[in-house]
Length: 387
Image (cartoon, rainbow, N blue to C red):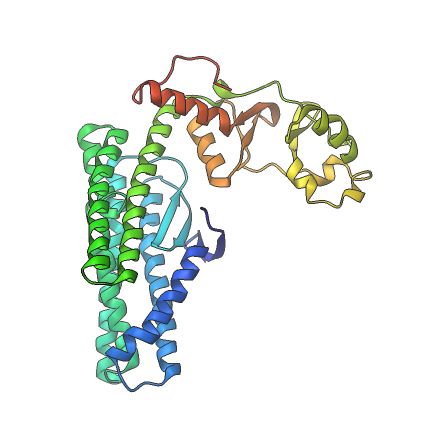
């Protein structure tokens, strides 16, 4: 299940988003630190002090994760792998890339940049803790800074494990990619190492549940193992999909027999004469062959129905953006990625603003499902897409 993502702010030109799962994690960490950890590490503080220490830990962890992901993003940008945003979720963060990987060197350096940044952040917090001890004593602030230093070192050590999709696993994939010159094969091999690591986490989770009688630790390690295993399998599917589609143009899968509507059409007529008769949920808005926008049934249902009789399509249509329009000569892999990123069921296809057709997620998914079943290493012969 996908959680809602909220944009927090921009940092170094990237959107920093928070998944709802990370909000839950932040509350859990703050409570755990203030109620369970810090009272044992530094005794004699007030309840408000412990709560403040918990909040400072969450803020420090937030900054650490952002810097970890920014390190990935900066290297990715340098090697022409644009990053659209950084998203914080329950197990840390991820830099969301637009397009594919450029080369093994860029992938390797991008992968190790994160753990290196976490190590630097750890050293930074340790140095601050030492300064705090010298001038303010070994009190609450010293404890928070030292703990953040330890936490960053732990993040670096965990991420450097050669188990995909952890950073160490991505570095391993880059090495295999360089050796085999096959990104899909490298992803498969690296994901196998991630699967082995995931099974180890499952085993440790069972040990915590059965031997140590610690259900909380067992559940968390089990969830982490599931995440590593599922993410690796998903990455393999994504790489296979991109490999099969990146040499295929959008025009191969495009449908040009799509009903279009005029921007001057009244919404009532749109519903009665187009939607009710043809059962098409999304219509391109075209005027003299030029694509102006799109109008969908879902957007109409959000309107007051009493206004349908006087509203025109031009006033309710969704504008064209780089996220819902693609050229016929573009890669079908880019089209699939655009639809997956925005949760769209189709894209408009236009050439020099002239409407030429649509490409649907369903067609691409059907093509991939059939092609991979027949031969995961070879695409189907050229022809019209399955529908």
